[in-house]
Image 1 (tube, rainbow, N blue to C red):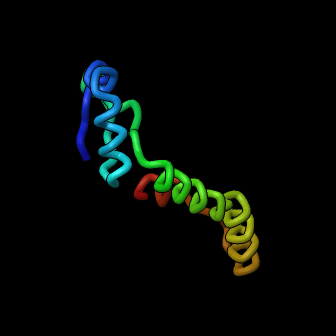
Image 2: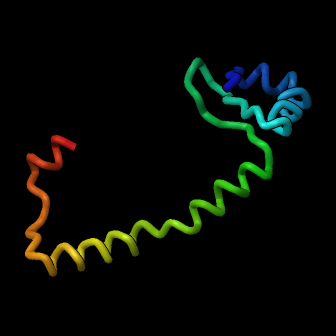
Length: 83
């Protein structure tokens, strides 16, 4: 992925948008640290759609219910630290 500064992005926005439309996302940075990504609207829509299908809270509640039914007592602090 191409990375450009905010100043460069400001001065070459049209070119960067064309890159994104061609499927080449562009990272935008401030003082060398990434702050944004420019990507095609179709790719953004696909990401939003994928994210909408994942309801982590519902999955976690279901997992806890299944684990509790199997005598699960939780994750120890040591186990969590190893992850």
